[in-house]
Figure (cartoon, rainbow, N blue to C red):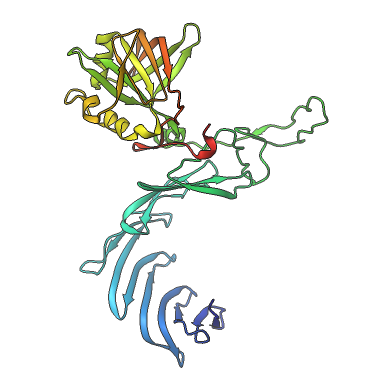
Length: 386
């Protein structure tokens, strides 16, 4: 542990940090007439000056205090000579090296319309970027940068609980939604009310009084829809016109009926699997396990027009019994379906299939999920698993 001695000027600006008591490096700070830090020198402090300098940082500020330039010297040699651009609301954007300057350009910073930084330079590789995810109250809940991702869970008061690498905790079922004022939430997905609070007296609760306050903020569809993750992924398999069993990875699958049992899948108009399902009049819906992530990635990124995807992946299959198709042997479950109807919806076609047979893996492996935009897949946190 170090011991510090500080000196301050008449404006209470800290002008130096002295570590001579414990043998550490000292620092000297310089300010402009508006008491804004403009320079830091690190080395050995003697007589109010730094000797044996190991590092110096200089900030060039505009009238509003934005960093127009940022320069770093290490051992009296230029290490970083940077210039920065800001928008009309003083948010930093482009971070580049000065013409003929030293250093590497950093990834650009991007803000959303609420001022949150949604893209930032990656500390371990500043030319690469990380994506920051915020909830409806502008609280940071995730920092994503494949393969490094950290997700935070928040309690009702907005305090960070645990974090997990490569694990998506946003929108966890049963987690209470925090109130904007930081007080205890009413419960998952509830609004905030004014007026008399609900009181529990052992019988039926009293009705709420007052009106619901708005909790939602308008957002672009492309931003709001990403809050759907984590999303289960399925593999649909159909026999094409050439007699090849073709798999495709899908995020859009749902149950549509109990009697008879029916499932629906949605396939893009340009996908090879679309014609395969139409040609076969039947398909299998497989729920892949965590261990099948590599296979699922191949099924979703390669086309059956160009290759035998099951053969290329070496996926173990077994024949279906009620339709002409195959099942994924290591999947969590498989459902054999006969096409009962189809509906075009924009750039996709929905196929409704009647389930004629279902199977499940007796080992009950954990399902595979898409946990973030850009084909980021994985399992759920241990706490969510069976």
